[in-house]
Length: 405
Image (cartoon, rainbow, N blue to C red; front, top):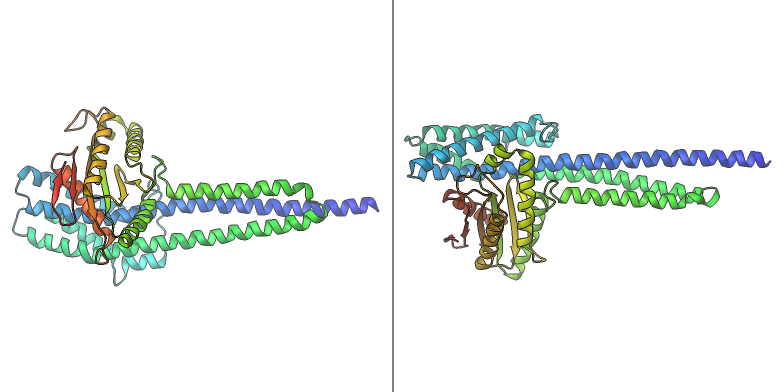
C-alpha cells in the first residue's frame, strides 16, 4: 500500500515538476521576447522620431541657404542640406524595408503601411518629394527657382510632412505599447497559474518547493526591472534616453503651465564629432560620448533637472522653473566643463580638444503654445551657435531675441 501511495505521490510530484518547468520556460521565453521587442520598438520609435527632427533641420537649412549672402556659408549649408536629405531617405528606407545594423525589422502593420502609402498621409511619397526638393534647392541655388523650391519645403515641412511624421511616431508608439501590454498579460497569466499550481501541490507533496517558487518570482520581478531600465536609459552613456526625455518634458511642460513658471531646454552637440570618429575610431568615440554625458549630467544637478541623450552626438537638458539667465549659466558651465576634460581632437577646426555647442530656449508655457515650440527654439539656438563658430552658447527668449555668451 505504501509503495502504491509513494508511486502515486511521485507521479504527482513529477507531473507538477514538469508543469512548473514548462511554465518557467514559458516565462523565460516571454521575458526574452519582451526585452527583444522593447529594444526593436525603441529603435523604430527613435529613428521615426529622428525623421521628424531631420525634416525640421532641413527646413532651417533651406531657409539659411536661400537667405544667406555669404558664399562660404552657402556652400557649407548646401553640403549639410544634402547630407540631411540623404539621412532622411536612408532612415525612411530602413523603416520600410528593415535594417539589421539599426535593429529595424522591416515588417510593418497595416496601419503603419497605410500611413506610408495611403491617403491622407502618403508619407512615402511625401518623403521622396521632400528629399527631391531639398536636393533640387541645394543644386539650383542661387538661381531664380530657389524661392519656388523653398516655398514647397516650408509648406511641406511645417504642415503635411510634419503631420505625417507625428502620426507615424504615434502609431509606432501605440503599437509598441499594445504589443508589450499583450506580452505582459501572458507573463502575468503564467505567474498566476504557476502560483496556483504551487499552492495546490504544496498542500499535499510540494511544500519543500515553496522557497524555490519565491525565488522564481523574484527573478521575474528583476527581469521586469531590467526591462524598465533598458527602456528608459541610453545603452551607451547610461543617462536617460530620448523616450525618457519625451515623457519627462511633457510632464514638466504641464507642470510649468499650471504654475506659470519658466521652463528651459538646453540642446548640446559635440563639435566635429564625425571627424573625431574618423580620426580615433568609433570605440574611442563611444568613450568620448560617455565622458561628456557624465559631465553634462553633473552640471544639471538639481533633483528636478534632466539630462538625456537626444540622438547621436546630441544631448538635451530640461530645467524646470529656470529663467534665461539661470539656463545660460548652466549651459556655459556645461561648455566649460567639457572643454576642461581636454579630450584631444586633432580633427576639430576650432580647438585641439573636444568642444560642444549649446542652444538655450526658455518659455513660460501658455495654453496657446505647443511644447514643441520650446524644443524648436533650443534647436534653432544650437544651429546658430554652430553656424557662428561653435564652442559657444546661444540663447533664444520667448520674444525671439538672441543672445550669445
